Length: 112
Image 1 (cartoon, rainbow, N blue to C red):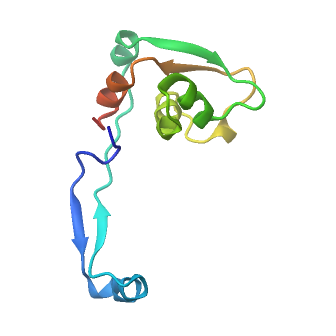
Image 2: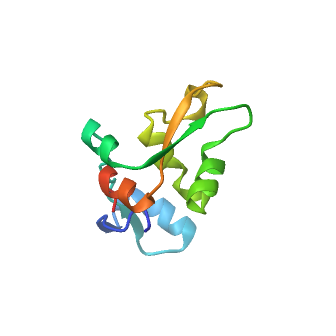
């Protein structure tokens, strides 16, 4: 379930990036189309099974993702689901909702 699985790939050989291609010794740069991620609606939130987690000192999104999803690379799902893109916006005692079914969450967010 890579994040960019359904994104278009552009092989960029534009003159603008010539210096970078020369530096790297490659003919093209691969650019991925930026995915459009949707905010979960109220109905989506009600229909999706979540676990409540009270944020405490030492918590990190990547640690929670590893705990609940088995891999740290989906930390951004927890951040986006809760509307807090960085850990600096989460205070101790804040209750986060963590979707328990990763595939459902990715589908709702529009990345799967």
